[in-house]
Image 1 (tube, rainbow, N blue to C red):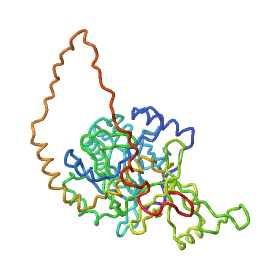
Image 2 (image 1 turned 30 degrees about the horizontal axis):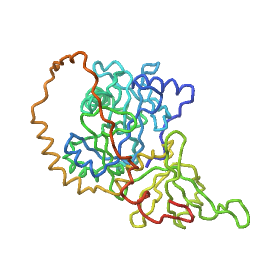
Image 3 (image 1 turned 90 degrees about the horizontal axis):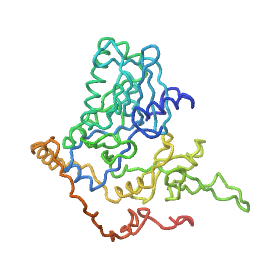
Image 4 (image 1 turned 120 degrees about the vertical axis):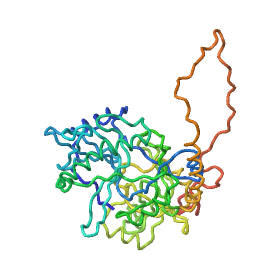
Length: 416
C-alpha cells in the first residue's frame, strides 16, 4: 500500500485556476472532483450482467487519482494528480506526451482516470505505476459522453500508442518520469476466468473486481454502470470515527488511558453526520493504537463486517477521503453483506452471460434513420392522470427486522 500520493501540493490561489480549467473541460457546474464512484455489487446485479454488456478487470489495492495533463510554458507537459478531496499535486519534470497525429508536437489537455500502485518488481524493488482505466478528456476533447469502448479506444490509439513509441525510441525518458504509466487490461465479463488467472501474477495487491458497462457514459460521482465486487468477507464501509472515553473516577474529565467507545458516524451530506453503529476493538488492539500515538478520533476509517463476531472491525485510516461513505452508499453495502455474491456465483453465471452477449451481437441492429413523428391533433385537453396510491417506503432495512445487520441492540448503554 502506498504511504501517500507523491508530488507537491498546489496552493489555494493556483489550484482554483486548475480546478476551473478542469471544470471547463468536463462541462461541469462546479469545481468539484469530477471522478466517478462505483456502486457495491449486490445479488440482483448478476441478472444485469446478462442483460447488458460489461467489461471486467481486477480492483487494484492502490490510491484512486485522476491525472490532469496540460502544456507548460517550455513546451513540455505539466502533470497533476487529483485525489478525491480535489487536492492537486504537481509531479516533477520528465513527462512528454506526443500528439497522435504529429509526434513532434505535444498532446493538448488530457484528463485520465486510474490508480496509483506500488509494484514489487523482482530485481528492481518497488516501482510506482499509474494504472489507467478510463479517460474524460483526450487532446482537449471531452469524451465523457462516449461509451466505454470509444473512451478506451482513444486511450489506446491517441494516448498510449504514440507514448509507447516515443519511449521505445528514447528509453531514457522512461527513467526520467516520476512514475510509469500502464494501460489497465480489460476483459469481456464472461472471460472472468482470465482475469482471475492473472491476479496471482500481478506485482501489486488486489481486493476485488470492477465491472463497467460497455455502452455507458462517464458519469461523475456515483455511477450505477460501475459495479465494485469484493469477496463477502472483505466488503467494507467508510465512516467518521468518534472516540468516547469514560470519565476519571469522581471527575468529569475523560480518562484517555481507558478503552473508549468507538462510534461510527455516517455521512448524510454537507457537514452532517449521525451515529450509525459501534466498532469493536480488542484490548491488545487498543494498546497498539495508544502506543502508535496516532489520532483516530474524528478521522475517516474503513471497516469491514466480521461475520463470526457480528461486529464492525477496523481495517485502515482513509486520509485520502474528506468524508465517509454517504448513508445511501452504506445501506447499499449493508445489502451486499446481507445478500453476498461469491466468486463462484460470478463464475457460474459466465456461460449465461456469454450466451446473452452473443445473442445481442447477432440480433439485427436498430435503424439509425430518424423516425417520422406525426404532429398531435389540435384542441385535445391534456390527459388526466390518477394520483399514484403508493405505500410509503421506510428505507432499505425494512423487512430485515434490524437496522445494523446483527448483534446486541444495546452496547454499554448505547442504543444501536
